[in-house]
Amino acid sequence: MIRLQKLYKAFGDQPVLRGLDLDVATAEIMVIIGRSGGGKSVLLKHLIGLLRPDSGGILVDGTDITKLRGAALDEIRRRYGVVFQGGALFDSMSVADNVAFPLREKTRLSASEIKSRVEEKLEQVGLTGMGDKNPAEISGGMRKRVAIARALVTEPEVVFFDEPTTGLDPILVNTIHHLILELHQKFRFTAVVVSHEIPEIFGIADRVAMLHEGLIVESGPADAIQSSANPIVRQFIHGDIEPVGRAASVSAGGANVKQSVRGRA
Amino acid sequence: MTEAVSPVLRPFEAIGRRTIEIVESLGRFGTFLGVAVALLFTPPFKLRAFLGRIHYVGFNSLLIILLTGTFTGMVLGLQIYFTLSRFGSEAYLGPAVALSIIRELGPVLSALMVTGRAGSALTAEIGIMRITEQIDALTVMALNPMRYLVVPSLLAGLVTFPMMTALFDVVGIFGGYLVSVKLLGLSQGTYFGEMQTFVDLSDIMVGFWKALAFGILVPWVCTYKGFHCGHGASGVARATTEAVVLSSVLILVCDYVLGSLLP
Image (tube, rainbow over all chains, first blue to last red; front, side, top):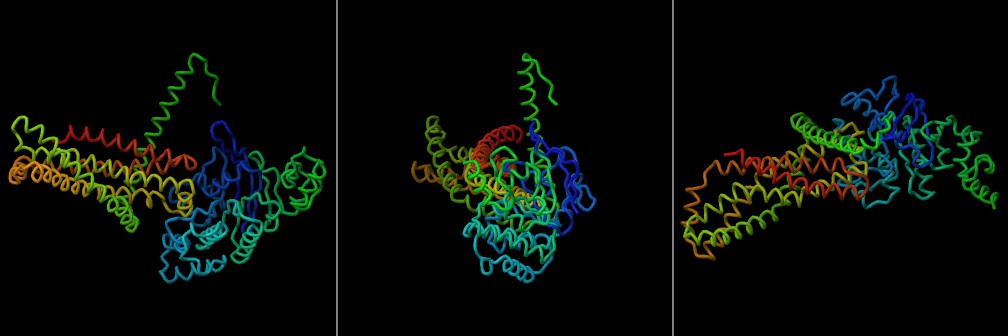
């Protein structure tokens, strides 16, 4: 269970998070949506301990990680897996070595055990036989899948996904989303997904939280968010550039965009 | 909340802010080395990363050291010969070349060469790892990135810089020999004999201590700049330039300080 309490962060005079509250339940997929540059990645960096808030707390099973440093913080991080936006694969290593790296460095498993676990993970993300490739030799979608395999290889309790489908075509977006869902059903980790992939992301979310101007303006089950009456949420979901309230009515992405554009014509 | 500052005081405020920034960045720079040195003595030790850095910093710089060392010795032989011949003191060419190289030019030029070749690459590599979140990835894996990227480089600097300086000294003296003995006709016995008389262990130790100091300085500056580079490709480019310029300036400053302190 992760609880964010009154999280505040400013860079210089610019507040990015302004007293944000959010709860993430164990084993759920929590999706955080919001506009680009709205502080989603900053929020995620707080969750994984790369940034410290100016005030407020982040409770992980009751422990405030904002007060932890060094080995104590690393103890919490050992329970984490993180899929970075660009994959953050080590380009000096092969795909297999990337996936094996956390096991080699953090466990005492034998070389043969590590090899079999790496092969198993690569198979789960659909990359069987790609272990010898260099990250530079594979496509963007494959890199994302390697990053997912690396994040999951230590069987973490919580996995953070920072915009896991950015820059991918619609088919790959769905492929990655299905992969996350499939792996979640299999391993039952808690997932925090930062995304602006609307409406596809609703297909995998247990709950969705909308981040707007440094605050969570609404959170709840995916269905409830999709049919939300909150004008900010509606405007974001429907991609409407008109004043709030004039967008064409609900349900799904592309059609709504068309409807909204036609409505203005 | 920042209070409104009177226009008269604004220049002082700007000077104060800049001073605080400089002091803070010096503090970060010092702390960076302190943390790296502390990690140097605490397990786990990353032997493979260390050997990789030895290869990267040392072995890959061999050719450039051989070339610069030989030509520096040749130029010294030529220039000092013409100077000494005016006073009829050509016999002292050997010790003059050897002392110049062993005490000053060996450690300084080899450090400058390694900075240009390996130091800049070190900054660029770590900088790219920073902007592509590879360093963040290490951190969230609960692995200390300094242990993987900085400590092996520092250790490799400590080991390779004295060795490369020694190599530079040998080929430099050989370069001086080629010009003075083979080209200008000085006797081989005079060249090496006088060298044996005038060069002693304390001279060699001066060069060794300097090389050791530069072996810490260059990896320290270059890894620090990579670790704290700005955003994007321009951030990495700026960090690389700063690393080379700062390392080079500090090498020369440190050379003077050590030159005046050591016997």
